[in-house]
Image 1 (tube, rainbow, N blue to C red):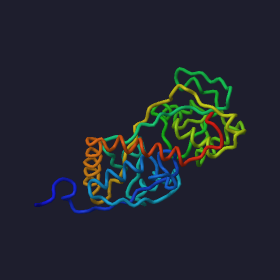
Image 2 (cartoon, helix red, strand yellow):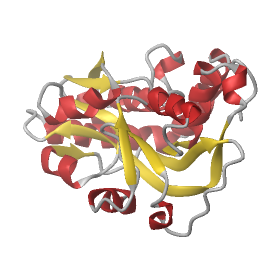
Image 3 (cartoon, rainbow, N blue to C red):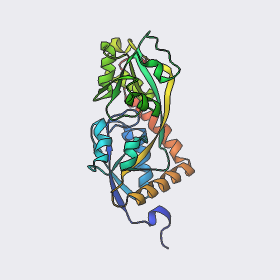
Length: 252
């Protein structure tokens, strides 16, 4: 009897960029992190072999847009990316973006424009919200770009910036694992979110079989979801990652 479903398709291969963004992405994490495992297992279920290429945070997306790599994951829609990339129909995770700041600082706001007097750090290549991008482009917000998230946390400590937007869980883990207990005690984050950002698998538009790869990803992801395996896998991976990453002290 001929095989049915995804396994009946001829095998395909794809190379995806990965960068360090615990607990979601990181080749030193169990299963490569929460999102890495979801992407790998979704493709595996659809007979696609995935190779991961470890690069810097900014290169993880700009390298795909330049045609140096097949694709990546954990990326949001932006106008520039949309011109050069194809996206999965299904979001693989929604990031909760918040402002990190020095403990005790009061920076109340209703709209982001209310923060015009503050120095805000951003990480090169990252997306925070449409509102943030628009205000940055109009120079309403005073923005300083840095090469990495840890650079921005250190700039917060030094008082060179006042606020730094980052995914809440990722920012907490970065502080726990990269800063000393004394440094951790000086940082906190706002409970009010900037935005909820859906993220996706992305492939460059000129990649041969790009649309078939996306179709297979959707098929595999749906198979994992319908079987309940996706939810179990996410719970298992999160537990493994949190157990493996040793904080230097309690979270701020």
